Image (cartoon, rainbow, N blue to C red):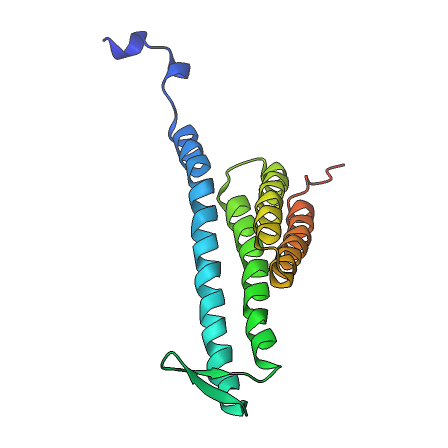
Length: 159
């Protein structure tokens, strides 16, 4: 029997293979969560536009499209970008921590740190107030989510 000569510790168990697969899925889950948040932000923007546009008093046709020039309308649409950024931070953190097989507290901290770098680069790269507000929404929601996840996955106090 040739298989008996192979030491048992060299054959990966199904649990180690599933753990490796879950680690591979962590960045894929992050990208999927970002796309879900992006789509949700676009849907929210469309919903705000559809609900608020009838209340617009200063409507004009621009490039075959009706545009509202009331001073309250565009800031209301910008809310969708802030909500989308905050939702992206939340969904990315939760999905990465949920998918990771172990070290969930470390995953939460590393994911937030990476997301904070991306948010700062994206927000400051736009160079506008909207970019900075979206960055602040993502950083704030990410920080709160990280704290929540960090506390949620604290080691049990066993006496």
